[in-house]
Length: 266
Image (tube, rainbow, N blue to C red; front, side, top):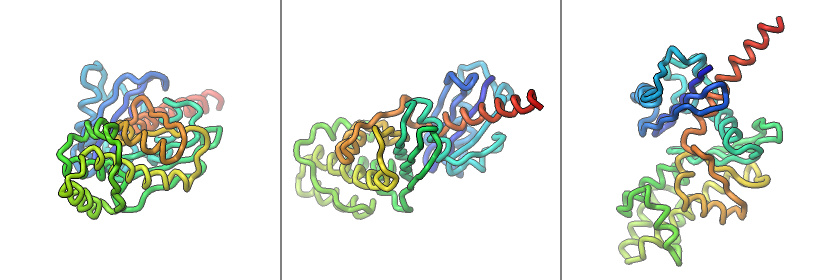
């Protein structure tokens, strides 16, 4: 049985094909989010090279900001529930999840049965998000994929105190004009992200280690800064950017399995 999970976020669209609720057959990410051709583009990419088609999918669940705009989905589930499910699949036993996406940050607390007990999200400000890091990388003229490497070069992180993206951008420009080493500015940017994201984690409470998901988890500097800010071990899911889509595919499988069991017992 194949199920498909689609996560349409604010800045990217993700898809996961799952076989029998156990094996990830394929996953894809396109850097186009809700309100665009993202759902169609990621669908094309995830099927490429699999010999599967949409007709082979027993169930399809969408999640994320644009979950109601996925015409081929058979149901929609909130991103909080999907991220929890996906994170537990890749990091069994996790109780606290931090998801850093393109436009938002989510902290999720689970009980030992894997149920969502509490969650907190950032407000409309982009500080602490992937968008914040993207803006700073452009100002610093450092590819976003290299920001983590620059972070670890720093020996004296520069203060980037503003929680507003616009003001922080001005701060970074001012630091550059003072010839502050770029690596120290990068470290300051990462510490600013960690401070904002960690505040959400503290609201839900940390129990044991922390599991990070989302595009922000691909930056080792962000992971390290958050670990130091909270004083806990931080684990990163194997496929952090597609955790929401993975959770949707898992829930799509469970819906079919539970429906089949009900029919067999009735």
